[in-house]
Structure formats: C-alpha cells, structure tokens
Length: 248
Image (cartoon, rainbow, N blue to C red; front, side, top):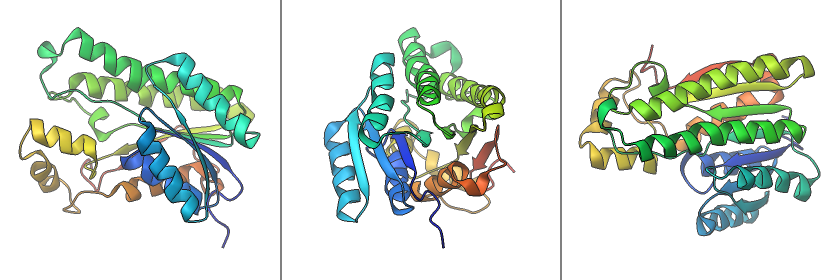
C-alpha cells in the first residue's frame, strides 16, 4: 500500500513535543522528509534523532513563531535542505492561564495573537511562496463555541479557522488545499498545564466526551496526515473536529 506522504517534503511547527512531535514521527513513517521547527533545540534534536534512528529522514530548525523573520527562515530552510516544500502542518502554539475575558492581560492577549494567529498567517504566506500543495493548521474545539475560561486563546483559534477557510478559497484555483483540525482533550503538556491551573479539568472534559477518554497526540497527528495527503484530494476549507464526539 502506498504510504500517505510518500516522497513528500513536510514542514511541522511545534515539533519538539506533543502533537507536533507525534506528527513529525508519523509523517516520516508515512514516507515524508520532515523539517521540524520549534523554539527548544534539545527537544527538536531528540525527536529528529528518533526519526532518523527509525529509518526516516529529518532535519530541524530553531524557530520562534512570534518572530516573523524566524518563521519565514524556517520555511525557507525546508526548501534549502530538500529542494521544495509539499505539505505543512502549522501546529505550534502557546497558552496562558485560564481566566475570564476581563482578567486577561494585554501582554497575554498580545502573546497569543503573535504566536497562535499571526504566526500561522506568516507561515502560510511563506509556505505558499515556497510552492506548498497542502496545509493543515492546528486549531482547537475551544474555538467552536464561547470559551469563558480561555477567551483569548479561543478567539485566536477561531480566527485561525477563518483564516484557513479564506486561504482555501484564495489558494484553491491553483490546486492548493488548506484545512484545519480542531483537537479536543488530548494528552499533551498544554492540557497538563491547564490541569495544574484548573484541577479536575481533564476529568470534566473526559466526562463530556462520548468516547470517554483523552486522545493521544498520535491520534490527532493521524487526522492531520490524512488531510495533508492525496487521499483527501477534494477536501479543502474544512475545520475537522478530532474530539471524541465532545462537540457532537
């Protein structure tokens, strides 16, 4: 059977841990040459070496999503290393403590904007210029309804959904597909941090999930891989919930 991403060059941001690291490993197993990008070099190096040890092809670049030149340089690095860029998973994001909308600080709001929204836009523009054929942005089920505990985070992710849909329309005539995934409760360091700030959070989210458990990062990565692949060749402009039925 043909691998999902056979002979593709893939860019993955936030690739040092969590969903991004799982995606980088999966994309390599599915035949892609992967360029990993994130802020923390030791994490990037560890995941890259793991992929290589398993027989995959991977390189990494240190990248700060809040710094547009750094993002553009990371995308350009994929082309410099592999000669082209085929698919991109814009996964990297940052978080702030849960608090109501009138208690969010200006610094928190600005940081979420710079990383979670502007960083995605800058990456997409650079990827488009590099000749990418398929993009998946990582959103959140927290973007789909009001989010009173994470209002700024939810707002930025909802804007990512809109940006994804607009880019799908802009890029579609040239055969470039743009989609997003909206993960639910997933076993990541981000969710663990929110659990520390709001004890019992994971238990409450599991109770609201028909499948009755957290997702693994690997399960979220599988959805991204499919959307990036040619098996989703007529799918664009979609925000795909990957939430165990929590928003059904």
